Image (cartoon, rainbow, N blue to C red):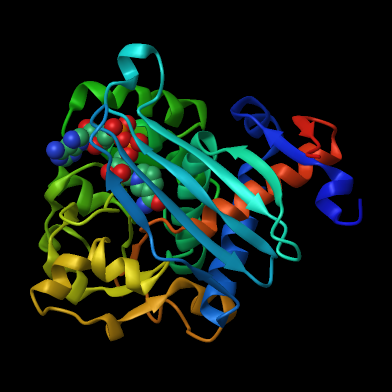
Amino acid sequence: MDSQTEMQGIVIVGEGVCEEVITRADAFGAVEAVFAAMARGDAYNFPVVREAIGHADALYGFKGGFDRAGLALGLKAGGYWPGNMDKGLTNHQSTVCLFDPDTGQLSALVGGNYLTALRTAASSSVSIAHLARKDAKVLGMVGAGHQSTFQLRAAAEQRDFEKVVAWNPHPEMLPRLGAVAEELGLAFEALTPEELGAEADVIITITSAFEPLLMADWIKPGTHIACMGTDTKGKQEVDPALLSRASVFADEIAQSVSIGEAQHAVAEGLIAAGDITPIGAVINGTHPGRSSDDEITLFDGTGVGLQDLAVASVAARIARARGLGEVVRLG
Ligand code: NAD
C-alpha cells in the first residue's frame, strides 16, 4: 500500500455530486488556468478519437490530455446516443477518468454530463472576461438548447449586462432562456438575427447549425462574439467573412482550424492558422487581447479534453475532501 491511489482509493463522483460540489467560479478558474497552461506549453491535448460505432446510431470517442502544471492526466469518454431521449436519458453521455500522473493508477471516475455544460460555459465566459469591452451592456444569445442556459448564467457574471437579446432557429425554445434571464434580473427580447447583431455588445452562438446564422455585415464594431456550437467538421454558425474582419482567438488552434468555426474561413483562404491567437496567450499577458473599442473579437471555443480534466479534477478533489461520492479500493 505505497501509492497515493492505493491509500486514498478511487473516488466515484456521480452527476448529482458534481452539481453539488463545483461552482461556476470553480469552473471559470480551472478552465482559465488550463488555457494559460496550454499556451505556455505546460499542457497538451491528445488527438481526439470519435467513431460511429455502428450500434444504436451512436458516436463514441475519447478526448484526453495532460496538464503538467495542474497535474491532471486522463480522458473523457463518451459521445452521442440519439435514441436516449426516448429512454428518459440525455443524448450526450460522458464520463471522465482521472489517473495519478506519478503512477498511472486510476484515481477518479467523474460524471461528465453536467461538467461538460459547466466547462463549455466557463470557456466562453473566460473569453468575455479577457476580450469583451468593459462597458458591454447587451448580451446576444443565438441558440436556446441545453447548453444555452449554462452559457447565459456564466456570461451574465462577466459584465454589467442590462439586457439579453436572443434568436433561435426554433423560436418555441426561447421562453426557457427568457425565464433564466428574468431570474437573473435581465430584460429579455427575442429579435431577428440581424437585429440581434445591431444591438448586442457580446454574442454567444451555441447551436448545432451547419450553415452561417449571423452575417459579417450584421455585427457592429466593438462586438465580442464567442462561437461555441461548432465542434465538428462541417458545423458552422457564422459567415466566414466575419473571421477575416475580426481578431480571432481560440482555445486550441489545431482544433479551431479543423473542427471549429475557423475551419470554413481557413478552407476559403480568408485566414490562416497563424492569424489565430490562443486565448491562453491573452490570459498569460503575452498577447494584449483587444486593442481598440472598435475591434471585433471572435473566440472559437471548440472544447478540449483538458477543460474536462480540469473541472473533473476540482469536482473529485472537493468530493473527496467533503466525504461525498463513493470511494473504492482495488486489491
Ligand atoms: P441542443 O440539442 O440542446 O440544442 C441545439 C440548438 O441548436 C438549439 O438552439 C436548436 O434550435 C439549434 N439547432 C438544432 N438544429 C439546428 C440546425 N440544423 N441549424 C441551426 N440550429 C439548429 O444542443 P446543446 O447541448 O445545447 O448543444 C449546442 C451545440 O453546442 C451543439 O452543436 C454541440 O455539439 C455544441 N457543444 C459544443 C461544446 C464546446 O465545447 N464547444 C460543448 C458542448 C456542446
